[in-house]
Each structure stands twice: as structure tokens, then as C-alpha cells.
Image 1 (cartoon, each protein chain N blue to C red):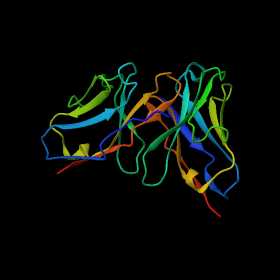
Image 2 (cartoon, chains in turn yellow, green):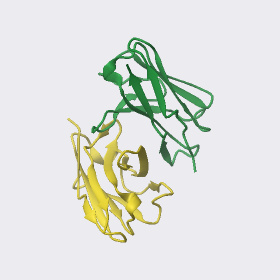
Image 3 (spheres, one colour):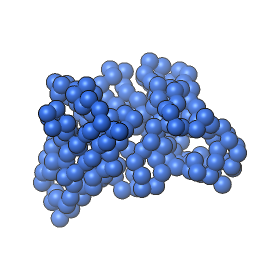
Length: 112
Length: 108
């Protein structure tokens, strides 16, 4: 059974940093692209970033390029999203996904 | 940046056919995917690669694509189909993925 479990969310001050993680199981992790998607309260889904199976290829949405970094550790079956220079508008539930599977999400709140 | 455009809302009576559209310039060459999201839950894939239905998704869900528009059709919509629906696809380069703004389907 495929499982994706996000963690690392929480409250962070504007301008701060946070790293969220997604632990995967139930499939050969290194063979798949992994994506991060977020959803602000009451708003729609927004694609953020993706990383290739071997970690050599990454792409980002314009809204986070230069502030967020996606990475993965295939030995730990985990994908990460490092978020820097956080703003109030980054407040959202952050999901990792390997279509068609999604995690339950982790809430990041940016507030002073 | 690339955009996918959906109507904000669609409303039908139970048993009627609901159609939700998604327009984007790259859709003639890129597949559309459709996700259903019910309140407080993670999204669920209901259509992939324009018109394929994952196992476990009811047959009343179907998809099509023509030109710059993809369409999700729910034939005989049921009350339990009330949800937000999002189309999902890539730009022409295949590198940037994007969701449509979402469509709230009301069945009552």
C-alpha cells in the first residue's frame, strides 16, 4: 500500500525558514518523480515543485523559485521542501504527491 | 506563466449531467488530469490522461479533451459528488505543472 506522510509543519515567523518532509512507502521511491502542492485556507490547489527520481532534475513554480528548494534522500525514501524567507501568504497545507497518491498534508502557518 | 481556466461553480440537480470545463493553451498537446476534493480531505484523482478512469472511480465520471478545452463529465450526478474539482496539466515544455482555479460542484 502506497503511503505518503508529511511532517514538519508548524508556526514560523515572517522571514523565517522551515523544512517539511514527506516519508514514502509502498513503492520503489527512487523510480518516481515527487511533487509538492499547497493549499491556502479556503483557496485552491497550487503546484509548487517537482523532483526527478534520482534528484538530478528539479522545477519550481514562479511563486516560490529562489525561496524554496526541493530535495530527496532515496536511502530514506523521503522528499523535502526547504522553505526560506517565508511570508504570510505561504500559510497553507503542504502536500506531497506521487500521482495518484497524496499525503494528508502538513500545515504551515507564517505569522508573528 | 501558464494558466488553466475553470468556471468557479457548477450546479445541477441529482441525476442530471454535470460538465466542468478547463481551458489552457497547451491542452492540445498535454494531458489533463482531474481531481476531486471534498471538504477537509486530500484530493482524489478521478480522471487521468484526458479520459482514463482510475480503478474505484464510478463509471459516471468521464473525461474528454478537444483543442484547448478539457471537460469532466459526471453523468447522473449524485449528492455525494458535491466537491471541488480541479484540472491539472503542464505547460508546453512539460516542466511546469499547474492546477486550474477549481470548480465547486453543487448537487441539489
